[in-house]
Image (cartoon, rainbow, N blue to C red; front, side):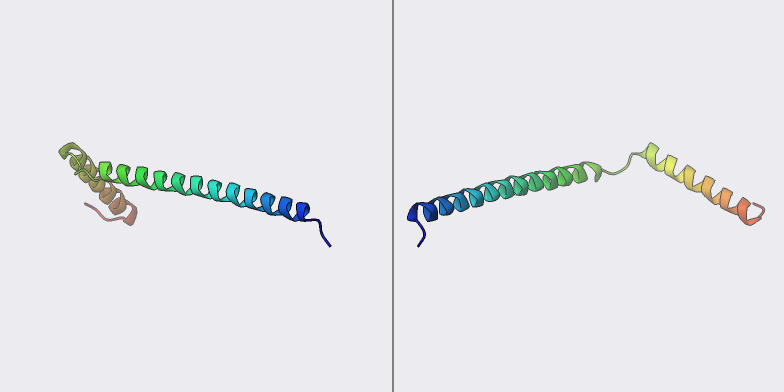
Length: 77
């Protein structure tokens, strides 16, 4: 029959290993939550409406693209 001291030692080692795994998983979970919070904060910062200068620049780029596509298609403007 097995010695009770060996059984106790194995149980303590298993419990210690389980505790280490649990702490590591909780730290990883907290890190993931912090990452998601940072992404949400960045999204709210980016959700600000574009300035007038930005909208004019985007419209200008769209017009240039339209002209280049017309040239590529062989259409006279």
